[in-house]
Amino acid sequence: MISANVEIAILGAGAVGQLICHQLHAAGIPVGFIGKNIDTRREQQLSFTAFIQPEQMTSKALESHYSVPIIEPKLEALSGIKLIIVCVKAYQVLDAITPLLDKLSSQCHILLLHNGMGPHLALAPLIGTRGLSLGTTSQGVLRHNRWQIKQTGHGLTQIGHFSGQPLDDRYRHLLLEAIPNCEWVDAIIPCLWQKLAVNAAINPLTAIHKCTNGTLAQPQFNHTIAAILDELVYVAAQDGIQLDRVFLQDRVYRVITLTAGNFSSMHQDVAHQRQTEIDQINGYICERAKVHGLSATTNTEMCTKIKQLETSKSSGHI
Ligand code: KPL
Image (tube, rainbow, N blue to C red; front, side, top):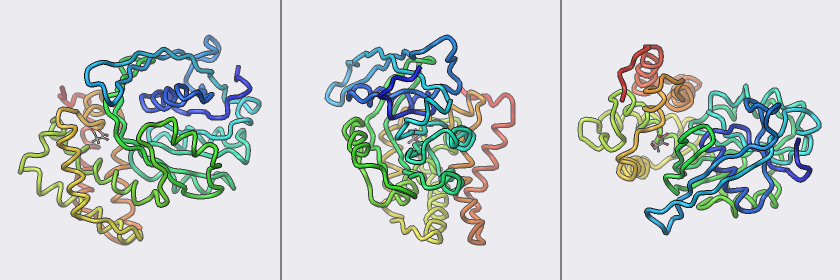
């Protein structure tokens, strides 16, 4: 089932997983999906369609159809994988990867690419000497149906080393070549905190107020956004990460303007009555605050309100 030369596997065939798969495949790099929830009895190849809008073209999208191998989550198929890119939601990371660990070689490098923070702290002690890299992507991508994605934005992707063996130069270069607007950073944790700030400020407020990202530019939201960021900057400092408060606020408002017409992922999760990433976004700030004997009142309030929306059956969205 696995083609002999597939060395890079993607775990999680959601919108981001399919986009990264498309980008690696388009760069000529053999890649496959690990078929956890894919019916491997019926399909040996997975076909999907990517509508990719090149940066220089504004209205036209290129349509590509792909077939990539599905890698069965078994020892003989997984032992040859050199790099596994984990693209599941943050709250699924541990459940998705831990059952595979005894089948992956000790040389296999793991790259986590998800919104929010937290799973790296739980995963690092479980993976032995294997290397762990972390990344964040602001590429916009929407899934039209199960195997059809459309790229909607060309934001920055940042990847960097976290623990264990560093990622082999060969794979590092392959990722940088294949993913547009992708950079390797020496210190990934501050980059993740910066992206966390954007999500912590925008996602819960858009879900609570049932509004687009752009609505948050209105003055009535200034106070809450400022409080979320104040707490985040303070807690990050206790974690040894110094963040520039003014720069962060500028970045948040820049994203609000650039994505003004979008509904955030948390808004969409609540609207479709799906689990949200609140625990790994504002919840992570509260969790780190607690570790340092602090409380993060506004972030806690965001968590409480989103949890209420998650449990109320009809949230009246859209
Ligand atoms: O990442 C996002 C999300 O919705 O999760 C932002 C940047 C807020 C864009 O909507």
